[in-house]
Length: 456
Image (cartoon, rainbow, N blue to C red; front, side, top):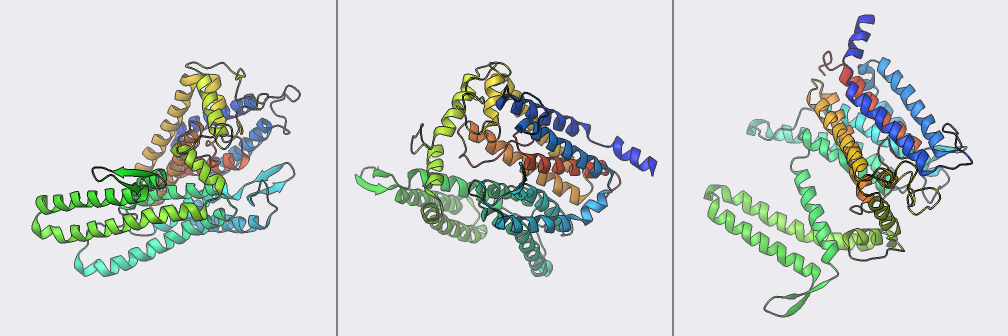
């Protein structure tokens, strides 16, 4: 038993552990600077945000140590049980008193826990267990097995949709649109495992069409040569028709005749779906979004300017980042992103990147971005060296969650993403997110430490 324990510890990826320790340490230091109050200067004061953050980091590391002494098979076997408990929490929290207009928290005195953060962990575990027990999707099939294979693939995808859909809907009911968006990160995992087909490509194209639609739908333009004024949505449809014509000509004159019919059908189907999608985006934008949500999207798309109203957060965030210059103003020397000026709202949570950038400048910002990039690359490399299908899928789930959080949070700070309340992993203030991201990493570290002895 002792030899096995020593073997597992020897195979721990200490690079991930080191990056974890650096991130949580820098996060506490940055929170301390962002909310510093001379009347409560104590670092471990539980009445302060930095004190609570340290407490949650301690709890997370204690649980992480327990995880390291567990057998990896126990984690795999408990995946659906953990998922079920978290789903129950997501249901119960809907009946809790609203905090800031959302039923997202279990409040315990001055502390609170947000089940939606743990929801990402539950989905990662359940999705890994589900897909690990499902044969990988195939791109080529013999006619004799195609029907049975397609039936099996439907069952796999249907169960996958349920695993992802239940927590996503419950989170949306809180409502927490930001966390709901994070659940779309799992499409990266499905794509890697061959269960999404070309869904990722279609998703990218859909996002491009949606953005263009939202930018030009309510504008008008003059049709060249004919001098006819048309609406922006009509212009998009015309552009789609022109592109379809170009592809039609390419198929007609480049593709072999025997291969043309399925391409013709795919082209016509894609054109119809694209035109319907353009109309759906405009209708959904007007029907399902609140006015402040529309305004935030319009601000990001550059359709409106409201620096002292809805655009206040983004403009103040960019001002703080820019004021840091190349090398920054120094620790606790921020003049915009500090507790006294309150120039940047939510500077210890959603916009913590601003405090860091103003104090450390471009050099510090580059270092932090590089640190997250190294972590993401490391997680992907860990995924690819696994002999265990379960661990590989789980590692990609972790990579996708971290990537979305990092990309959206930094994007919010620099004005490239709407403000939707996504924390910077292990860096922003928040006990629930620290706990969730710590558990995600510690479980991955544990499973990876058994990579030489686990094949399932």
